[in-house]
Image (cartoon, rainbow, N blue to C red):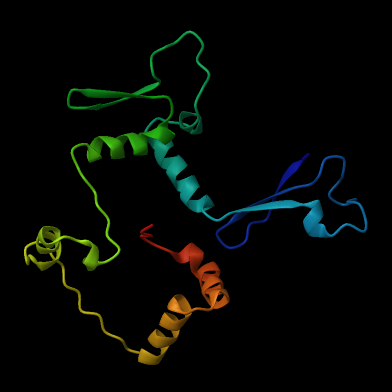
Length: 178
């Protein structure tokens, strides 16, 4: 791969195109399909990334804070996360979120169930039947036919309509529970 050029972004996305080494953008070899001549990467989250970088700058950190650095001779971590008497060394800010999450999960036990039938009686009582812990939501349908169609697409045996739906709506997902 040779030269990297920034091309005009589509609505809300930045696109980078890299022309193969030894070619010019105007003089790409003839007879080779365009998709074989360029590598295109769409950065759909560029606005969020730029906003986060501005926030980091306001806190006194630059983009280099996100990257590990070769620090020959120094055994001290670049950053230190302190919680009570516990201290965790960090080499870059990218590891901060996972370190905070690990510190917050200490002493917790998280169990996931696919359905209520997988729970034993005590877990079912504590999580689902106890009015102090449960949350009841009323779900209403304004268009039952549209809901039925969507249910058939997502839960049906045909893979292609489900794949098309996922590809079409992938960037709109919020709170994905994997």
